[in-house]
Image (cartoon, rainbow, N blue to C red; front, side, top):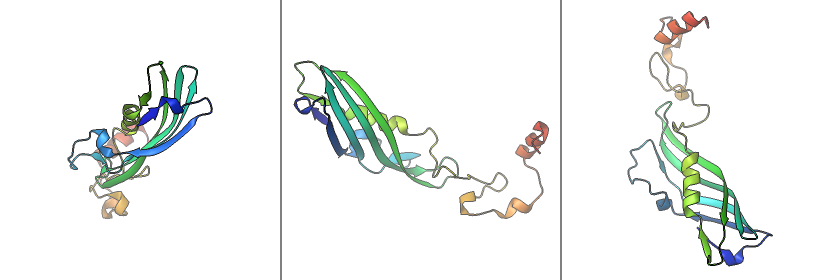
Length: 156
């Protein structure tokens, strides 16, 4: 995303658009935990204060993959606020914000992506995905190792 310095003023310049997902430099494999499936969208306001550039706004992109909690499919939109500042020199005719936008969305990605914030994961007894409904083993009274530990801590 190239920002022309000549169009900057103190009143601000609103810039919206998208950058192809190839800019993320992601491996082409779809076998990983998570991978981008949409272009990088941005909405920014750029202002010039004397010789200082201030850019504020947001960036977002859609990612797909495998939920780290339940093993199901994941398809989520991730977004991040962007604040960037740079000293402008008289020789500068444009500012390239592409790497800052790329870094912002990559930093927004969680270490362990989940399909939804309320994903219940897997049943500790039978391993069934709890998002598909209650499992048949929930009525059994056998204890798991976690139940034994809970009893030691006084939670039960």
